[in-house]
Length: 210
Image (cartoon, rainbow, N blue to C red; front, top):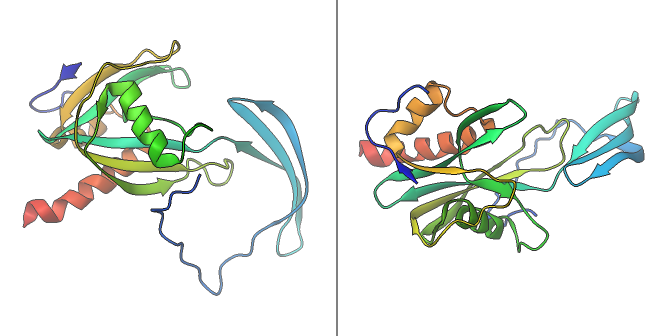
């Protein structure tokens, strides 16, 4: 585990979700005329929908990638540090800082349960006060799943990590004040991580300015 100090250098639906607002002139949903699965694998399920739009136009081949819901955790220690990980991502062939994150498994009781499990497995940290930060979509036009983001405050090391055989993860504990520097330097590029981090940093501002 690496502890950083000083300025950063360049190198299922959750019950906490709020009810979405609707408006009288909202666009109407599309009507699905037929649905066919073209590919079904654990990490790549692709379906093809034939849809009719509210105006009557049809799209005969509209592709949607199906994934299970994902979770990530903004984990803050009692020393006002954030628990981050670094791992290689083959899609962009690079290593960057990330939040502890993972998939909501069938065995999980819900996204909050999955988030606690992923934090404990990937970093060894646990405990603290937990709250739901936000739920976002990676790509609402083409993906079916959502990402549930949680805040865990006052977490502590609770034991050794339990990484899977395919995981090669490094743990870094970084002062919260250095997070913006990591993003600005390009050391963190995962948009689904930057969104809840930004939400958390904005929530801190009134308390710090008081």
